[in-house]
Length: 124
Image (cartoon, rainbow, N blue to C red; front, side, top):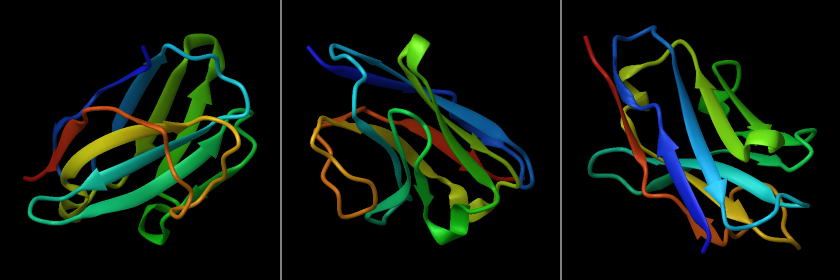
């Protein structure tokens, strides 16, 4: 059974940092794509970033560029999202997702599996 389990969310003041983690199990990392998306209160899902299995290809929503870094530790089967300079508008439930091959990167590329999310709240 494939599982994606997110952690690392919490309450942070504006300007602060957080690192989200997503532990994947039930499949072997090989030619996959991984994603972080978020859903702010009362809004729809918003794609944030993608990465492929070798970690050499990444893509971000414009509002995340320069502040967020998506990364992958294949040895630990773990996806990360390091977030800096957090803003109140980053407040959302953050979800990770994974795609089996063949797969691509970018918001239009479909994902096969989804986690249940971790809540990030940016507030003073």
